[in-house]
Length: 277
Image 1 (cartoon, rainbow, N blue to C red):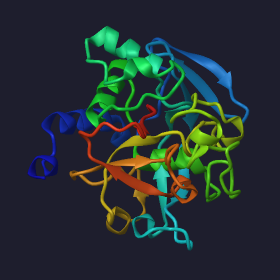
Image 2 (image 1 turned 90 degrees about the horizontal axis):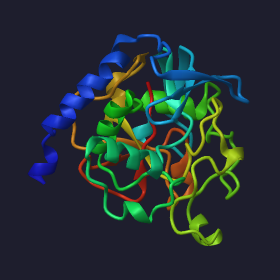
Image 3 (image 1 turned 180 degrees about the vertical axis):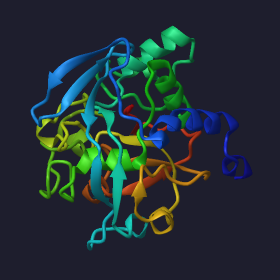
Image 4 (image 1 turned 90 degrees about the vertical axis):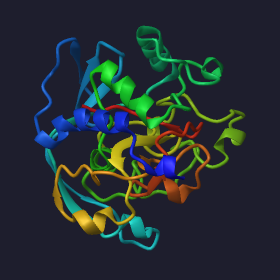
């Protein structure tokens, strides 16, 4: 317990390094080695990262209401509060097994247990938070903050789920027992459920796998931070924030405002990540 309660030095350094751009509020320019893909169906510009092949969606600066106060909300989602974000970019898909294997081959990082059993188009799971951050450093990106993640998932209209207020179905998200209904075990290919796209055009922001965020988790963080610009969560903590629910989650956990936590050193087949910049 004491070991888990200590903030890991490596994690703290990585978090500070990759949060610097967020806290500075810099506009995301097109980096060297990246290319403009075009505009997606939702009207947002997309860029491709030449290092890992990920496609990122440019989200303009602006405000949205973060959190929830309706009857389905939990205490850590309250109060709903207005947040202002600088422009940023977030990945269209979760990082895949193929992308992570490329990172391991390039850097000498150890392949996680049973990685070879995952098809290439499945989201990468069974990685720790620090391993996800190491991947980001290699690819020239970072993990999204919790606020950035929620803005990309729900847009600015306060919807309950990425696709709207309609309750989840197997056509919209991989959730609950969908792995049994579809004769699959665990995760689905990234981007398989086109109807479940978020307002900015990101896929699988509800279901499939939980996704690491940059922030430390605090059940009272919304009470303590209130409204603000580019919130990055507590300065320290024990758990990291995860968002979005997984293929094993009940519908309530797939809501855009639903928060959860994970030990940063734990590997789980329910947890993966997407990148941001």
